[in-house]
Length: 186
Image 1 (cartoon, one colour):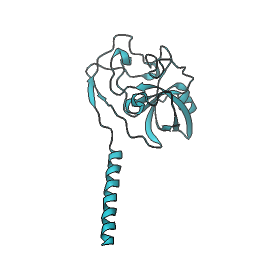
Image 2 (cartoon, one colour; image 1 turned 135 degrees about the vertical axis):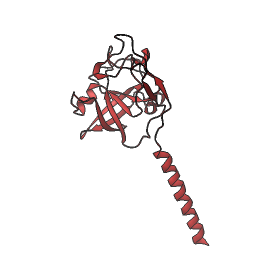
Image 3 (cartoon, helix red, strand yellow; image 1 turned 90 degrees about the vertical axis):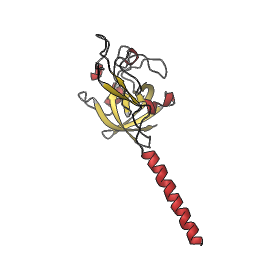
């Protein structure tokens, strides 16, 4: 009887472990779609080869990002956080602009987590190198194609949008506009 009870407990623990593992592995699902409109002439800053919304094109939105682990997979994109840069207005976290020579990033909406990572550092790794950068902004995955978002599409849900300083620290060539990376809270 003791063996039966231990066996039942073991089976229940295995079921619970499998269930919680499945929940962690579930991907972040789209939250909606928005329809693009053409930006007014000269209104979409294409510095760093930024995309501009296109009339009639449908863009997927997300309120979440993939689960964070000790080493979270992401896509690195480049952004200018300087005044007049393709990042648009000042950064959400401190209402300031930041030099392209400073290692700063914007995180997709889910990872930005309502600003809970604001002004905290993350470590970004790629190409056998690592760099520490401060989170200063959100790469909005829920909205886009309007003046507030510089007429750019919504961010994908797995983006670390980084200043030129981050790209240089990782040794990424100027000709590249995306890079598979991992990141973690520093």
